[in-house]
Image (cartoon, rainbow, N blue to C red; front, side):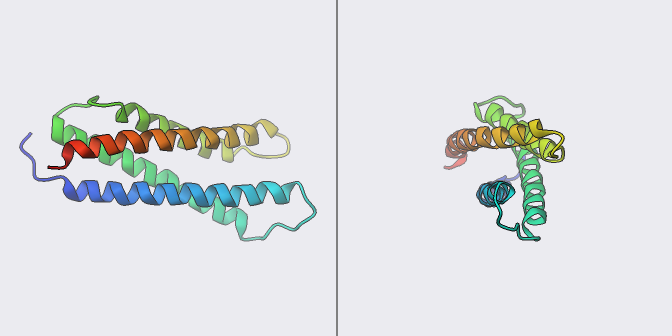
Length: 145
């Protein structure tokens, strides 16, 4: 395809990835506080749970934006998909983020499995973000002159 430079798209992707990683860290910290106050006598700040949900949905949006950018950028540059392990890594992260978000909506005292799925998924997401970051760096090297 004879398309203009996609450098602006890669800048959006870089910012989205950085913000996704920041969101993941904030979610890990706020989730840890939510979990620890759930099992203690200390009161939970009223703003913490809504903040956790809002940042979680922001991260879902950022990851879906990254998926769109990756698909458009790869198709625009190569004309097809599947040129590196980054596609599998990215799709894995998208699936884990969506599973984490879906399981978070099911967490209740009557459904203790949902918290276990949510926490386990987020631990796996650490590996997924590491993998997608590593493979993404390899992809970036192909585009740099």
